[in-house]
Image (cartoon, rainbow, N blue to C red; front, side, top):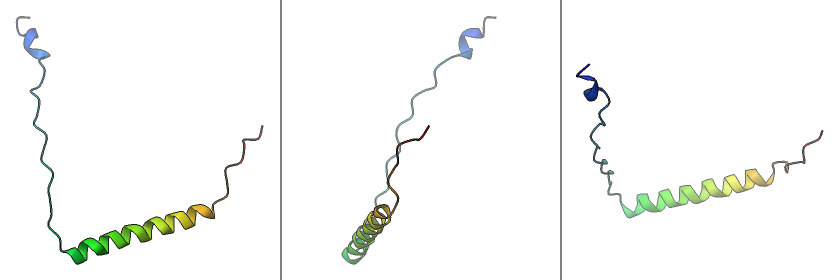
Length: 58
């Protein structure tokens, strides 16, 4: 039973990993921004045509 104090030791904390950064051309950056805007407009249009939430019926 002398080894029981080693059983529940805390693990050492890990250092957080650094995020990767990617260099892209201004054209690619603009194309990505346009893609995001297009996606947002499609989502907005889609949401506009969904039925509104009705109160729950009992």
